[in-house]
Length: 124
Image (cartoon, rainbow, N blue to C red; front, side):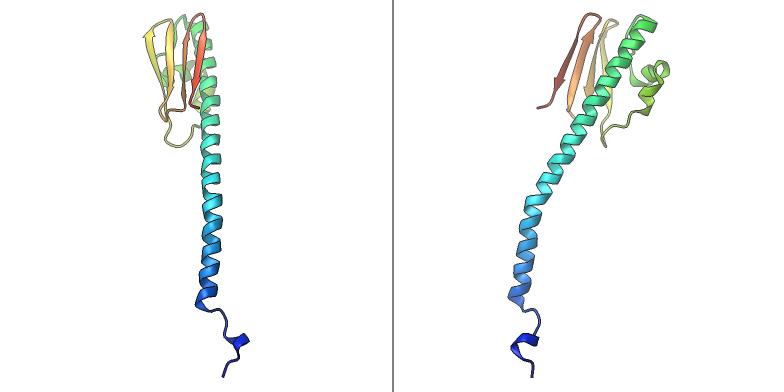
């Protein structure tokens, strides 16, 4: 016959361990998700600034803004090296040849620019 000390874990002990693990997960997982989202937003912002600077270069060389990313990367090769957050694409809208709107598909922000000024609008 086993003594009280030799019986091993009983059901209540296992439930307590699972409860503690669950509490830790509830605290850690949201913080991890928030940190990852913040990193993705920051990467997107940096990429959009690189694209806006490339548009400035394109304007100086061609006298107009690039209509899309492919055209922009033909003149400014480093645009092709941009790695964006998963699922994000950048689009350029040209209301006219002397202004553009650069938009993040994930809604992280946009840049509006013309030949005189640039306005940055980021998700808060």
